Amino acid sequence: MSGTSAFLEGLKAGLGEFVPMWALWLGSALISVAIALGLISLIAMFSVWLERKVAGHIQCRYGPMYVGWHGWLQSIADGVKLLLKEDLIPRDADRVLFMLAPALVLAAIVGAMAAYPLAPGILFADIDLGLFFIIAMSSMTTIGVVMAGWASNSKWTIYGSMREAAQVVAYEIPLGVSLLVPVMVAGTLNLREASAAQADFFGMGWFMFKNPFMLPAFLLFLVAALAETKRAPFDLPEAESELVAGFMTEYSGIRWSFFFMEEYAAMFLMSAIGAVFFLGGFESPLTHLAGQLFGRDLVVVGAGPEFAFTAINWGALVYQLVAGGTLLVKSFLGIFLMMWLRWTLPRIRIDQVMTMGYKYLTPLALVCVLGAALWEAGWQALVRS
Image 1 (cartoon, rainbow, N blue to C red):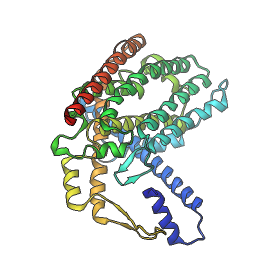
Image 2: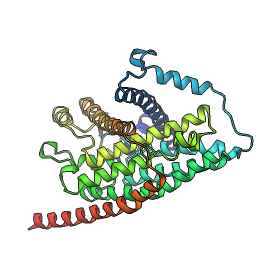
Image 3: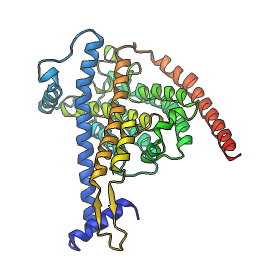
Image 4: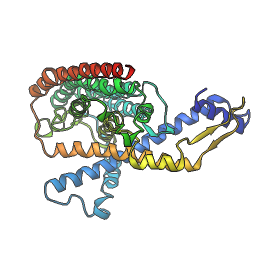
């Protein structure tokens, strides 16, 4: 029995037979969804503030300064404004699809967040195919974007949505192929297990240092992730200087904010994937030290048939917090890099986007996979000999 199932069995034994197992599962699912939505909201609010400050400093100005200390309340003010703005639907729009599109986009990214590990022992769900699940769920946002563009019945929105469809088709191939390189080294698609495989930090255990094809694969992943998340220089679906606001042109208020939240949550998840499969995940010198001092196992489950003795190792909670904070910092460093590139590079044309994806990134990603496979096979043969 898994640790989660054992924990629920122990909780059931503690609450008595009056609480059915399905109620515990439903309650835990609702709590997980609430935490995921709260996390996405916090990521979006902080990222908006960070982007304004990053853009300001790159452009030799301060950014927001007046609403709160250094403008930290500006994002909350913007959120309140969006909640109070009128929700408009164009007269000739397809009302059902117009309303469903932002809901589908937000639901897809909330589902993808289920595979994100908050800490080694604190997870929404311990999914064996975690990487595959995140990529699959985040791809569903494209359906919402195309739906929004079509339902709005505007030439600007349909242009933006068609650009998004073409861009995702072009760049999901090198994105997935480039991730095959660390997956071959890790031997797993589970984010928690991939991070644990890099625990020997002082022995240069990060995957980035275990294979010479890791660095080019990471650079390819970074470029493809920028296109996947619609970030400059690949922000063709929005392209405010060309298409007003692209596929979001006809949206306002809370529905517009759903697209906004999805973009920053997708940036966070792509950065977390890069951190886990290339840059050590939870592991760092501080994490290694906390694990040595306090232990790593958070939940201790009794071995009895009733699983009634489930205890928390409170000392290991320090390690869990340090590990979770480490991955969070690495993920936000990835977001900072995406923002830096946005305010540094100009937007490229749609034909250049397609050419780069099909003609250069995909073949280079396949070369990296082949080279990494040959390296791993040769290294394993050398170890066995």
